[in-house]
Length: 218
Image (tube, rainbow, N blue to C red):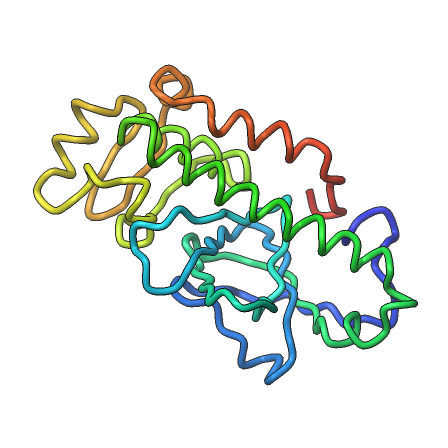
């Protein structure tokens, strides 16, 4: 949506630094903001359900927040970093002019729903180490940095039940090769080892992401 000269000159795009934690919407007031991560990673999932499967948004996606709908959702910045922010009210209030953007936004929202469905299946049918390895591989595909590093506190609970308290060192050293945990930071150091342990959920989502056009910053 931001590449190939598709960005309308009438819109104002601001580069912002997203801190870890809940995605703030104060900058747009009561109106919606659209966020396009550069090197940040954002998770989206139902409020009040730590075990629910969540969707991940990185450099190939966008988050329009607050989301419109009946379901109460929450957005969390899992990996802090840069993002482009656009006031979505301008797009929403002029649908004729921004038809292409609205179609892209609908496709992005559909992609988030598909992610949640896929990860929900993963949580129900695959072993904890399998789904964590698959989740980390998908995170790496959506990240623009060379080595993926995540705070253990930011990881979705449904993806890492084996990474709790005193079990962190044992899980990373014995159950999931390719991962190191030091001082509360998980690092994915060997993608090939993760690939050997992962289920196929991340591959199914990656195939869907290949149809997304890269933006100018990619």
